[in-house]
Image (cartoon, rainbow, N blue to C red; front, side, top):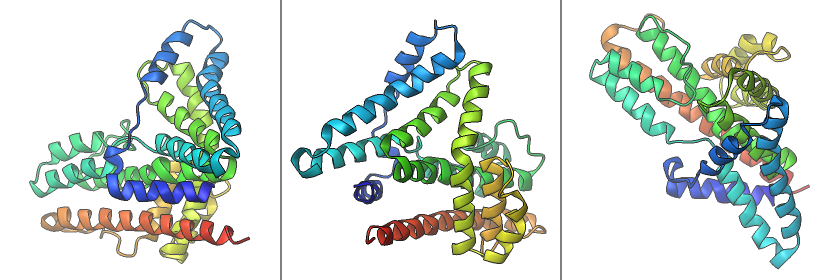
Length: 283
């Protein structure tokens, strides 16, 4: 059932694109406001995350065996679509590269800040450092918006995929207090530890294996954050990484080519794991 749901979602994304996925979070805003008066921080976060998760589990049980499993499949598809990342990352990335082609460093920086995975605390000192941060955001974006969600969806079902997305959504809300943010960050780091290492290994398989292993082998069992691990492993896996001594007049074109290569690496990783899941269906 999970495999059919994943294939259906992939087909839907090919038709609609990420920007057209129907994802509405108003209900979460309303629930957040209702429980904001609860003083116990852990209880408040537990209610915000576990109530929707329990609702998904109850509906999943209720739909078991109904109409040959068709309603359950549609339910799986709906939950998986909702649990995917937000926004159209590719359109923001295109605006970023367009700014580079115009020679507009300030415009490129502003567009980089709009990228979901961009570290707003980073202060790039030059064009090369800005590009490195955008490349890092690209790898993490591909991970958090798709790979981590599907990992938990396959391992523990739609409720786990939804739980991961709720951690991410609540962590990005401006109303979230620093204390809540700290707990959410700990939860996100826990949920991302294993799938991030699995994706880093996948980068090695579909990319430059030796370079990836030498770059990240020491960090695989440590508590390295997913964005850092994926940035190092993804960059090492690229077939044609950008030159360190790239001339200024070629910077925009080479940076765009490297980002395109990174997107293809992520796409190959998705295809790789779809093939693995297809094989697992045979056993």
